[in-house]
Length: 98
Image 1 (cartoon, rainbow, N blue to C red):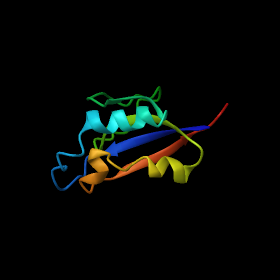
Image 2: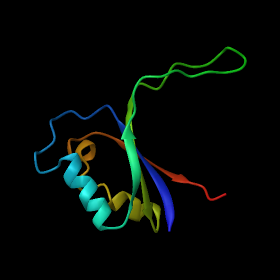
Image 3: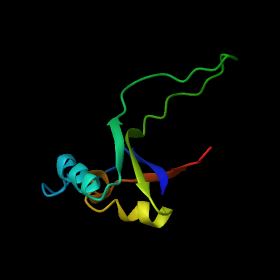
């Protein structure tokens, strides 16, 4: 199994259907034995030793870490995700094994 981050963007245009809530979505991921954790992302800062850091990416609002056999399987786990279901963007990134 591979591990992926689902990065939620702040671009959902519509309110999510009440059937697509975070508790229901997390329960679905746990039932599929895919859930590894996650959190909302609060404020912070970017830092660089050179002092030339870029601004914080304000479009990212949260992340979920999941296990899946492939990128396609990770994408299939988006069904029921409140951000995705409301028309927002969810970025899927593989975590390399190392």
